[in-house]
Length: 240
Length: 240
DNA sequence: CTCCATTGGTCTGATTCCAGACTTTTAGAA
DNA sequence: TTCTAAAAGTCTGGAATCAGACCAATGGAG
Image (cartoon, rainbow over all chains, first blue to last red; front, side, top):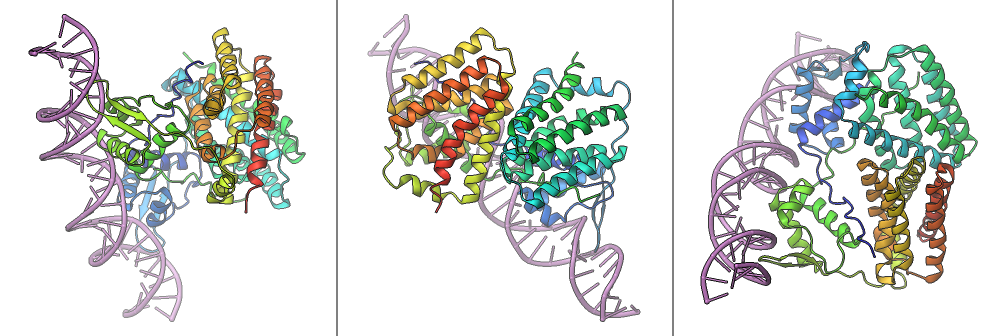
């Protein structure tokens, strides 16, 4: 018998500091467009409860984001924390810089993880009988991306991808896919949105939806794999 | 444009209490056999560092496990925390009880998550060119399970499954698979180990390994799906 | 037998994080 | 104009957690 591998199940229990974690989370929610530009974040008390932290800690995080110009906080009734941030148009060199800010191993980790969980989610969903409402939601998200203007494209693309995981009804899986997406957000945001790429993606998105609605797990998995492989190859190409 | 879904990206930042989380982790490491019966856990200082918590908190967790009879702690040089726990042989009714202790939605979540990440991992791995060493490791783990006695079966089965994720080289993916496995450990431990099931599993394990080594992602994905579907169906059948 | 490296056991002060009560501001409703 | 509800802002005391220094036991090496 061989050593059964010292499985790194003894990985960190807590990711780190609650404050920093919270800032990161909120920032990602903003960058991913979970809360759109101009929209209001949930009230502090509610948000603190959702994030499982105290209001004090949440407020520190919000203040940090306010001071960095991501949020505009207004008090009084109908007040709240409003998203002010707009993703800047990527400029030449941004992508290379973004890719290299992340180490090669970290990039590889993120891309591999994303490939696995998103393919897994698509496969699982294709294996289910979707209710008409679920099918409609999926088609709706697809249409949303296709109708999106440049400023909304990333946000709706994200919503489409996460929608697949969420429709499986598994919070764990949805969280994993959200996490996977998080880890590449900054990179995706640094890729210029070219109409050629959008059309290519649109075709792939359609293929994914078709495979899922047809109940073909193998095809769904393959469609997602091909879709993600494009991005992955592009990013890996920028590694110094 | 539809609401882009209030993606629950605003899920809890911290899983809860550091102490409880740590107890849970160590317990799973013991139940999963990451640290075998009679073996020593890493020294407190080292373990605390790995888990990213303070020694104080770790010690509280260790004491809890000691008082529950899972660990035997000895001081002095060559001392340490030794695993004393042995999984009890499952008795009739244990499985039904275990399944119903977990809510139906939680069970479904865990099974769906596991299906997605393990299929994803196998697919990713099959898409890679494995080094001879990696192929050997995979074959080794397969052989280990096949040679296992009843008392070691679960542990080596776990090692085999996790090995696939770990060979992808993605810590995130490995962690996700470990997490997925954790959530069904208690259930698996309540299933009697029957020679019929073992033989069935052995054939499926072999199919998985073959598909991976052949570099056939579609087949690998399908083989894992079939393997897990068996367990999933069995467990779902016990839902009250 | 003595020494000593390694490991668990204990203590202390600082920091983070929390729960909850209370205050202030604000925009709309009455 | 006044009142009110909903929101952010403030304060306090306590619990959880940490970092690090120090103590105590133990078993092998010399």
